Length: 144
Ligand code: HEM
Image 1 (cartoon, rainbow, N blue to C red):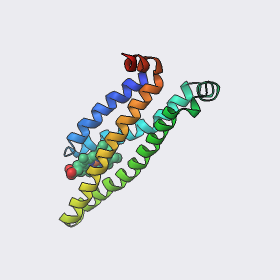
Image 2: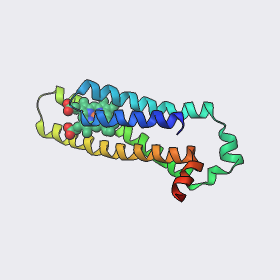
Image 3: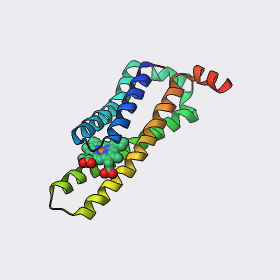
Image 4: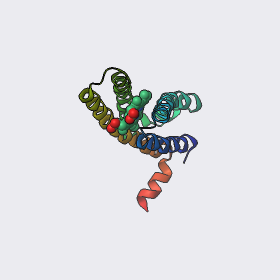
């Protein structure tokens, strides 16, 4: 496994903990904000440290299904993050305002359902990223 994949797997474990212990509000919010920043920074880091011209154009990887699947999942994840932050702000606002229990419950439900989608999308982003980073070892696993 390459460094960025190991880092991403570790942040995934942290994310699972923040998902599980959402009632620890400060822990939950700070971990999730950190992970969103991590995911936004990762493409910049990869672009600055790798030779994408050779990989995508010269080797023709830009036409591969794996690259587009990975890209599509990343876009999905970013869209889910935007919606998730919106519901998070609604939770914070609604819980501060006068008690509208039903509205609060509905927005919690939404945030939870999207959260499950985020866990799924992020897991798949890391898996497809791992396959793209190490095509040789992935093939060994498939042939074993
Ligand atoms: C900037 C990002 C986020 C912020 C500010 C945020 C904020 C919050 C807040 C304030 C709560 C209520 C905590 C409580 O129970 O008192 C909450 C609940 C929760 N959050 Fe987040 N969250 C964020 C991202 C995420 C992400 C990315 C996930 C999933 C991977 C997630 C999953 C959950 C879940 C499952 C709950 C419990 C919902 C329920 O009450 O059933 N959150 N979040």
